[in-house]
Image 1 (spheres, rainbow, N blue to C red):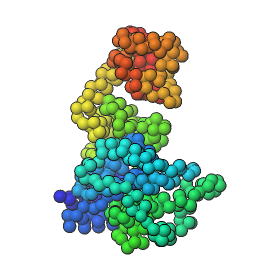
Image 2: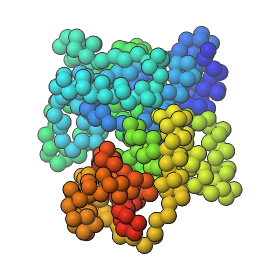
Image 3: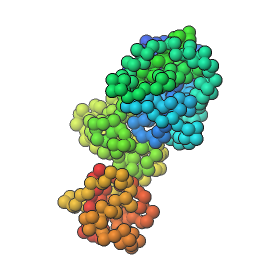
Image 4: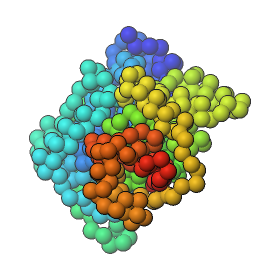
Length: 404
């Protein structure tokens, strides 16, 4: 049963940066409600970077909300467009992906995106189904729908042109091919980050040229990472991965800057807008932000790991961080670039004579003499990811804190 259009609009608008355009969206929602026919929501995925974090999941969460409102989601894996690669934000052309790479990345994508989306309410398509069948005459017709001047309006192409960095003619076809996907599936709505503005609006242009009703373009803002400044990125180390263990995810959410608490509620959860307003009021009336952040961490961890694992994460957090008996004045080590796990940081421990050798460190672990955040670790924990402000302890009085 599709709910009333005004209530749908209230939920859809939560956290959105821009809609092109709102009047058309409301008209589509009313038509859908009157006929009880779901709208077709398009999600295009570039299968070149399969590791998903909460920043990537902003769009997925919005689409999940639309699934819950009764609409149909079509996930398009860009296996054909992936052979070119999205030039958005790129200073040079990208190496084309092989079919094997695309298939492997797509499999990893599915494992992650269906931690957010309901697979029962989603259809998966590969755009090679239709793009590989276009005749040369049809490709020319596609190219005739736009001009070189418009393509060069894109900052990435414009910068490369000014700096005399080569631009392949085939790269101009990326936004056209992605837009053609909207024609093929007759998308009603397409979502993306603000960095996808050009590509998604091109879908509206092509649908108009093909005599179809234009899709609504919904743009979600980019989510800042744990540093509170840069957009969430694995390369910057300020990310929260959707596949990270519940205790890691919970602790990372607790590191979100207070200024971003409401934005994370809006973009990283499925909470109703009215509930988020309540959270705003609580913060404005002087409630400790840490208490609100605990609620946020519980909600986000539960979305990806369920209640049981989240309860374990809460217990771990309270034991390891809230009730820790660790001196404040202890040595600190900045984790080197590329170091991620307990095993990776052993050379740094040796540099400060915390341990004499790797073999000594492993021997101490076997003797139950090593603790991480007041919790004994064993050899299986050598692959455990080190977090900002993790504290390693040997014996009763030797501590070192790690900083990222």
